[in-house]
Amino acid sequence: MELRCGGVGSQAVGRRMDGDSRDGGGGCKDAGSEDYENLPTSASLSTHMTAGAMAGILEHTVMYPVDSVKTRMQSLNPDPKAQYSSVYGALRKIMRTEGFWRPLRGLNVMMMGAGPAHAMYFACYENMKRTLNAVFHHQGNSHLANGIAGSMATLLHDAVMNPAEVVKQRMQMYNSPHRSALSCIRTVWRTEGLRAFYRSYTTQLAMNVPFQSIHFITYEFLQEHVNPHRGYNPRSHIISGGLAGALAAAATTPLDVCKTLLNTQENMALNLANISGRLSGMANAFRTVYQLNGLPGYFKGMQARVLYQMPSTAISWSVYEFFKYFLTKHKLENRTPY
Image (tube, rainbow, N blue to C red; front, top):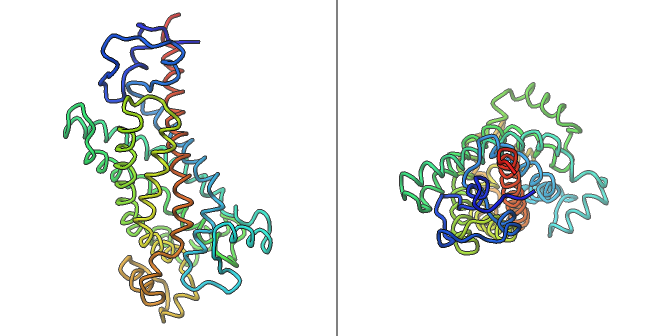
C-alpha cells in the first residue's frame, strides 16, 4: 500500500503540520520515503484522542517502577528500611525485601486514569495550538501559543489524573496498608471524603502548568531545529521529547515534592511537624517541607524524577506521533482510490 505522488493522499500526507510546504513547491520524493517520513497536514479529533490514550498508557506502564521509587525518595521522613541512595539501588532493595512485583502496585489505577487523561490532553493541545498559532503568528510557530495550549490541556488532564495520582501514590509508599486500588479508594472515601482525591489539585496545577509550558515550548523549539520539515521522524521525537521532559522535570521538582506530601499525607512527617489532622493547601505544604528538611527538601527525589520524566516524555511523544501518523495515513488510504 502506498500513497501515490500527486494524488489526494500524498498531498495531505506530504505537507507540514502547519500547512507550509518547504520542499520547494513541486518536488516529489520517492514514494516509499514520503509514505514513511511525512506527517499528515491535520488529524481528526478521534485520531488525536486515540494516539494520546495509547501514548499515556504506554508511558506510565513502562516507567511505573521508577515512578514508585520517585514517590518513596520524596518522603520527608522515611522509615529507616525505606531510605535509598539511587534509583537502581532502590528498585533492587524493594524487589528483594518486598517482592518482585511490589514496584508495580497501583499500576492498574494509573493505566485507567492515563488513557482518558492523555486523550483529552493531546486533543486539547493540538486544537488549541493550531487556533492560537493562527491568532498570534499566522502560519508560523509561536512559542507563546504552544505554552498557552499546553497550560490549557493541563487543566483537563489533571482533573482526570489527580484522583488516580492520590490512589497510586498511597499504594506506592513503604508499608502501605492498601493492597488493591479498590480498597484504597474505599478507605480514602470513607475516612477523608471526596475532597481527598482533589486535595493536591491546585498544587498539581501549579506544578503542571509551568511543567507543560516548559515541556511544550522546549519540544516545539527542538523540533524546529532537529526536524524543521516536521516529518514523521522517530529519532527527533524521542530526542526532543526526552530533553523537554528532563528540563521541565528538574525545574518543577519543588512543586512535585509538595504534591507528593499532600497526596500521601505522610503520617510520620506530619507528626514531626506537629500537624494534627490533614494537611491541605500548597502554601502549607511548602512550609512543612521547609520546616522538616530546609531548602534541600524541595529537591528530594530530583534524580528519580528526571530519570522518570526523560524517558517518559520520549516514549509519550514517539508513541503519540506514530499513532497519529499511522491512523491518519490509514484513513487517507481507505479514502484514496488506487
